[in-house]
Amino acid sequence: MNPVIARPDGAEYDRLRTDAGLALRSDRLRLLVTGAQAAATLTGLVTSDVLALQPGHGQYAAALTAKGKVIADARIFHRTAGGYLVDVSAAAAPGFQAMMRKYVNPRLAKVESVSASLDCLGVIGPHARQVIAHALGCLPAQFDLLPPYASCDVAFGADTVTVARAADYGVDGFDCFVPVEAAARLRVAFEASGAALVSTDAVETLRIEAGRAAWGADMDDETLTQEARLDTLDAISYTKGCYTGQEVVARVHFRGHVNRLLRGLRLDALPLGEARVVSGDTDVGDVRSRAASPRLGAIALAMLRREVEPGSAVSVRAATGDIAATVTDLPFPA
Image (cartoon, rainbow, N blue to C red; front, side, top):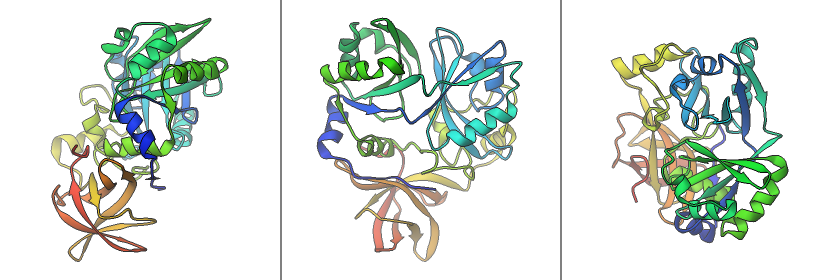
């Protein structure tokens, strides 16, 4: 894995928490899944119940191996124009595409990459609705009642922007899907409406504070869904039909528990490179994404043995020496 080490600019971070910032999301994989069996096909491949989605609504989900390990986490949007837009991080994209190629029957569902034709801009912060409404010439109330991952289409000149409520940031935010030829014009409109461009480090700091695992940094294809706490993010349906990896997920949920969990760490300093977590003389896990939060100080996500409860004092063993830390639950307390 490649843990994130985020050192955000303070002004950018404050903008995201108090106003509105603009994040470029072009690197993510975007697939359009259409056809008579599109919903049934996706439902059989991911942990959420795609068949239950109404047009204009969406879900967070995971795609798993047969052993219940996470291949990718994805956002699935049921478009009002028809079909399903599936949005996956760049790190998880190769594995997810390989799974789709292997298991999707093209006679039942068509899978088309639209990453090159459909761009994505994120507007993040408590004033995100006002910025988007001003840029698109509509009322902020149009976005007030959108639940997480729900979307609406708004005209932008001759083009259409799909505005989807994002739950990735820990603060209010929206991802705006726009034809690539109109993306530069939309970016100018967002900036003119008050959303200044922010760095990846600032956005990643919010994600870490919110306790959301990123594929390739905090979870991979050796991680169970419940270890990464995806069950707490409404990514799993326990009532729908079969899907790849379901037996393992259900067994953990109904009959037992995982032996390790993603937790938070408050640290005296930010560790660099590989870092292990030690309780007494016992190795209890490893440090993953970490950030120098302007609000919380040095923080990190760590995969720890289940018995290491929030409030425990631990030591982080890194190349630069041992660092004192305290285990916290997620998301990080204010």
